[in-house]
Length: 171
Image (tube, rainbow, N blue to C red; front, side):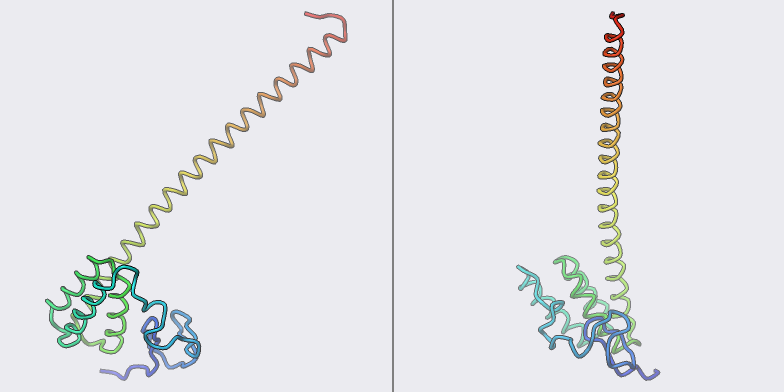
């Protein structure tokens, strides 16, 4: 195995030689929060027990990283309790330190696929809402155009009637 770059980002686990800031996520190392105090490490509201169980399952993975069963149990748990971010973070750091271990790398790939699917679904929802807003905007714009056109036709008609009335030849 080749030697890994010595600097690992505490946020995204990217390895590099530069000790100023992360080339991947931009974290400035001198400004990084202390371990355990970072916002990305906070326990999500109402998920304390699920996080405790995830931590227990993660310790089992670390004790036997090539165990398919232990990796599957951790992955299932983080997916079931919506702790995808935690699972991704644990596996990114583990794989960064142990790139030769197959099962953790496979588990990370599964979680990345799930995160990609979730992000894609969210984009679809946002896209459909955007299309709905655009459609509503077009309807409002077209409605206003019809109203303005009708007002102009009416104004021209009234103007014509007034002019006709001035000329003495009324209806």
